Image (cartoon, rainbow, N blue to C red; front, side):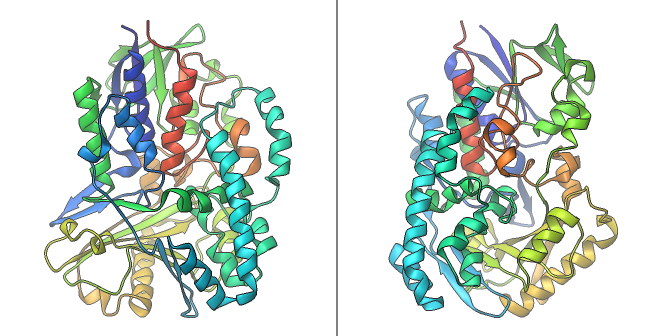
Length: 490
């Protein structure tokens, strides 16, 4: 039986392990952490269950497919429930917008903000549908391993106006500045700046409308557990707390890996769910890399970093929704400082996650469980997080207390935070980026890190840094791309 090693137990790696197992491979998954999940890690403290992320579940059919490979039913493993509204959006001025699964409610909200934008919103939705049908349904799980594959696609991309940024596309249909923010924030969920992300990513708006926004009872970690249970049932092996230090390359082919303690494991192919820039720079010897040299890697535009503050309270904030987005006083200028100047601003925009609204079981009785996420510069900036982290957390808590969580600090009974240094040191994300590579036009599809290595044979990539991109649908789809590229085991 042919052997495959999967480096990294994030969603992309777990999905690839199952797909390789279905092809007949003997599969071993390795991860440096003490739990499966990667960015879907779970912290358990003081009776609280904190999902590290992701927290927005869309396109659940991509999870269902993994169970169907082995004639299993996802519903026997996971309970998904719809979230409504999908996002509660609060502007710094106090205005509020409920981003809903109901189209009629969405139209009513748009009309409440700007009646003249209703027609534009309906036209925008149709545009997003067209982009979705091509970008996600037709091309999302297709490999882009050759320049010819990209050239063939070029007329379609031009027709879809992929040369526009997300914000530029939205602005063609929406005139109210606040509504432009409402309909252009999605790239931030996958590591992109709305002012530089290709408009192909506006398909996320229709993807949500097509498949809904869901929550897994027990948290996202319940999905990880279910997938791992399935892996155990079908014979996929795992080794945790096992750090891969090198991909062994022999005459241009990946033939196995070496662990930090010097142990070597042979394989017929290797799938890296670790961050692609990190893998090329630190796990593959320089003389085995012709395209992805160190200099080439440093020319890549990386996503922003993330500051994530987790906290539990001894009271329930019943008026707070499952997902809340709090826009700060600035939008374009703040993103310019985060992505381009790489400086830590005095203001911020926040994503507040309160899963205990939907699932009280993840907190002690009468308690609430939260995390709040702030986009921040990645480690290419000069932020000294050891010096400013605690002060930044305090400013965020004070802002939440003034806006949506009154008297918050008197009710916090547990809290901790992670910075971009966590993403660098524990998740091995190059420069501590939250989502690996930015989704710009010239860092998408063929121009992104390829799912099949250009430098090393029998080496494949899944996860946020490769095609089709970050976010749970993206990384699960990257495993489908690799599935297409890998031959059946003999």
